[in-house]
Image (cartoon, rainbow, N blue to C red; front, side, top):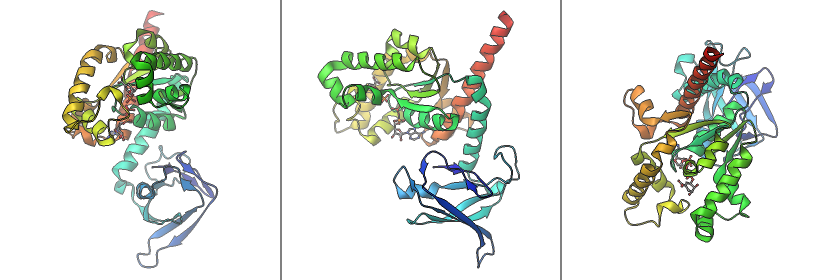
Length: 318
Ligand SMILES: Nc1ncnc2c1ncn2[C@@H]1O[C@H](COP(=O)(O)OP(=O)(O)O)[C@@H](O)[C@H]1O
Ligand SMILES: O=C(O)C1=C[C@@H](OP(=O)(O)O)[C@@H](O)[C@H](O)C1
């Protein structure tokens, strides 16, 4: 998904789009007489799947900032075809989709927090499948940070072997050694969002590295985790074991045991983002239906709170 804003003669696209060239021209729909805008992209959506284009939303501000003007006209796609031509129809502000609203709030919260972060890295921790990678990518994009997945860095450091292969060839200990080395190297850097592996929290030494930044725990109910990891397949996550006939129950049992061993460690994080709490705040919404954007917003808000609190405490001490 991408929101891109446009000033006269200029289009800015989220970094998910790769664009070689673009043109646009205002026109009028002959039947509805609605104001239309045709945007043609010579580039491609990096995600590759064409149906994702259905989620394409365009917000076209009259003024510079999308966030500061409630009267902005906005446009949503009428059609989407494989040649990259999108017809857009004007929609009123109050017709903005949930997706528009979430994205605007996300941007606003990110703008507010960026100066206070001072480039500090964000370490996402949490059980496997908690959404560290998914939410991490959203946060990195909106904050203008780089995204790193520590599992991927471990794999690269092992010459391209998968996590599952590393566990097989070098045991969990070997994997954890590489993971610690990766975290050590990342701890010297700035402006990164890092999706850590679910077990990174078990080694105290890793906390020394992660404490250089802000640690954010994505706390997801175990049932939701089990459903997610089963949906993508458990092969890439060796601690879940070989798939059995009842994958969901097996995953739930293993996740429960891992969680019991790690709960205290996760609780050491600077910030907790509880999906259960968000769901309650939203009127007992189903946890499984919370979008990654909503979770990213909550993460930014919780980070903001802790930074304000710490600033006040430091001021009180000096
Ligand atoms: N908020 C969410 N709602 C539904 N599915 C999600 C959500 N966040 C992540 N997922 C899905 O769960 C799976 C695991 O997410 P991922 O980000 O890889 O977790 P982690 O990096 O913590 O292991 C992926 O298939 C992802 O698409
Ligand atoms: O919980 C764990 O111990 C692990 C989680 C995995 O990462 P994700 O949390 O990204 O799945 C990966 O590091 C490895 O399979 C071990």
